Image 1: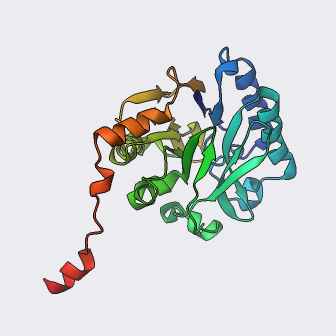
Image 2: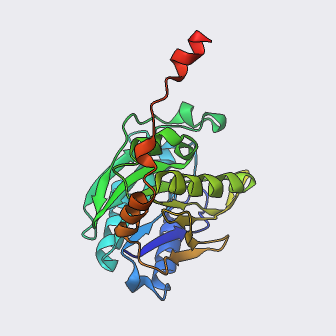
Length: 259
């Protein structure tokens, strides 16, 4: 599978301008015919706003991504708000929705928990032979989500609005999730200014050994994996280094009370 990460400068709370920019970047991408799966960032049309009415996806917004999937014959994952939930939505090549994940860990430090509803269920879905676990931004800081799905997932995808000042955390955690779970881990972030925050992008994809498959840096554009993502690499890595099978449910609480 050829994976592509869509990293762009989202115009703050201006969906129509952002739709136009998305179309421009896809149209001028010289390698767009190679793409099997295109992933956008968190709240991809509005930016990470706490104005819920602006962030909420309309039928026209949904149809925009559906039409892209159909026009370019690609699978698409994108972020947007539905019924008060901060969602990651995935469409197949026909534009049919195949999965919706609602962000479980809301970013209370930025007031997200006061504006949106938290999800309560992890998701796992299949896309062209890959078993995929979706996550959104702040979820990345909670490794148990990824551990829970490690034996079942071949690739984790994380969409985000992750500020530049903590870019090193973002890249380190993405790589850690790949290495510790022996799976691909792809993260898509934005660039530019959003209200008072600056974003450096650093959209990345790491393979099951922690090697870089995609590094978008801080530029705007569509970044496509040079090598085909291979589910067999996941299986071979786990067979050669069978670390996941050695995990234990360590009785932390029990030991703490005895000490």
